[in-house]
Length: 602
Image 1: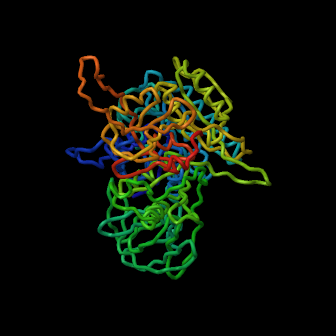
Image 2 (image 1 turned 90 degrees about the horizontal axis):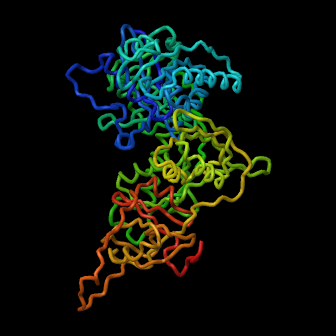
Image 3 (image 1 turned 180 degrees about the horizontal axis):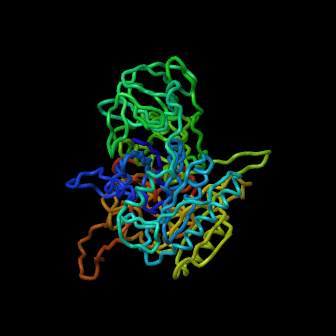
């Protein structure tokens, strides 16, 4: 059979995973009687909960005389490292663009990376059945974006790019932008057409493969995934592993598999161009090379965009440490972090002078939250500090990362957003009407101005705003920036929280805790209405007396508290606070628990 390697890429929520579902279904990958879950490629627990793709995943479909290795990639900018890694295994991309929203920041990022590698691009304008579709305008915006990238990069680009139109959810695709029915056959025909090249590699040379992903099997152990770039790899034969240190270690291939539908099929051998899964070597890393034993020639290692955010992570020193988690030691925490960076090329980690504290570097707050959510669910107790941007000094000038922020908001929210962005050193660069009753705004803003902004943005837009950004480079540091405007309500003693105490503190600010929970001195129990911190007693009990009258007792009614998620906590905390994370709870605490040792004012 012919072979094609194609990645499906788009901005977040533009419908990649739903489209892949339909391609798998219409290509006959599933039997007619098979019950298949929605967004079948989003197999991770966190992916299903959040409704986003976090890790790039492979599958394979067969259509006519061609096998297509399809890669479903994340759409969020924080997981851009997954997209960059995936592009090293493909010869073409299918770019999805929403028929209403048009190209957004991640669209630009993916297109730039694809064109740098000379990858063929096809475009599918999705969700054409939306009431607010702008098909002609969106096509023009995509073509303008291609021209802009071409002029900035200096790469030669064939602008005669095929456009297809349809709906992934309703399973139809066509070259005709006016059609609102049909099936996925036109798009499948396009994927196997001559427009997308088959891999063009030397199949007769000595074997060579770049490891671009890692996995694990309970039966086979560690798995290394990559595309063979030269020669042939055979099952049960010797092959050499070349690590970052250049050392050559021969090992026997214990299992050689290729992608087949959603699963994998064991094969005796595979040739250049095929994406394979190899087991037999335990300590491989992304970026390593597998090569013939008689000609161990290493390939260039994977280089991706550098991290822009760092966060301190520590073992838990809370008074409640050890009550809710299984793992508590710094050695085990370091093992978790090392494993996370082995499987994700855009993460970096380093120890500090304090053996209990480590630094994790990532692309953004969401990526940090996902990493620690996975560690938390593995049974670990830990503490996380406020994310900080990574600065550089270039020619004696302190530089910080900047981002292009794109917002789609209701018209009546523009004033509040412009005001908030001004306090975060953001500069408005473009503003235009976008559909009925909505405005698209673009800001040039320091990356640290976006830390903790998402929850404020959702409040200002009443949950109707869309926010996305992409990294544009390092620029001179813009000076001090105000963090959280309000202080914290801090528990001044350990004990059980009472409804009576919380009811009497309602006028002091928003509360983060519930009655009957245990607390300790230094735990943050709410947000103060004023800029200063306030120590409060949340364990106070009502003194009983013999006097009881109808009007004496008040009915205690407490308002609901915000969901205590890791994302919310990382958005809210300030520099002198930790997020305490356990498998059962998310708490916020001061770094200095003793109130006599803390400054009273912020």
